[in-house]
Image (cartoon, rainbow, N blue to C red; front, side, top):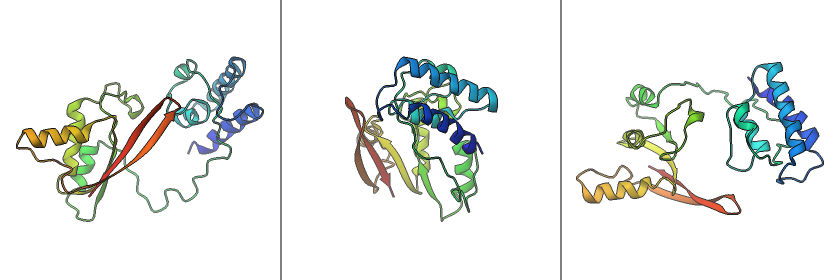
Length: 204
C-alpha cells in the first residue's frame, strides 16, 4: 500500500542525486538535504519505508528502520532508477502473518506443503523482525524442527555455522542431523570490496 508514496520519495531523491556518480559516497552537504527531504516526506505521509529506502541511499547490506538511525549513517548513491511496481505481485497469494511455530502447526497436517525457512543469522540484531531481543541459540535450533519429515528450502550462510553445528551434534550425540539426505548449493556474495561470505541453500 505504501509503494506509491515510496515512489514519490525516491523520485524526489533521484532528482537531487542525478549529477552524482552511482555507488559513490554522497557528500555531507547533500546528505543533509536528503535527510530534510525524507523527514518532510514522513511528516506529510506519516510513514516511510526505511528498509526499502536504505537500499537506495545506504551502502550495501546496511539498513535502518527509523529516521534517527538514518541520520547517523553515511550515504551512498545507490538510488533505484525506476519506480517500484507491484501489479500482480501477490495475485493468487494468501498472506498470513503469525509466529512461524503456529503456522507450522496449522500446516503440517497437509502433505503438499513446501517450507521456505530463512531464519536470521545466529546472534544477529533482529530489530527489523519486530523484536527487541537477539535471536538466541535456542530459537535458532527450534527452527530446525520444521525440517523434520517435511519438504523444505532452508537458507543460511557460512556466517551462521549451523551446518557445522548439526554435523557436530550428529557425530557426538544420538541426535540425527536435520539436513541428512538434503542437497546443498552455495554461491559467493560480496558486501563490499573488503567483505564477502557464502550463501547456502539446503533443500529436500
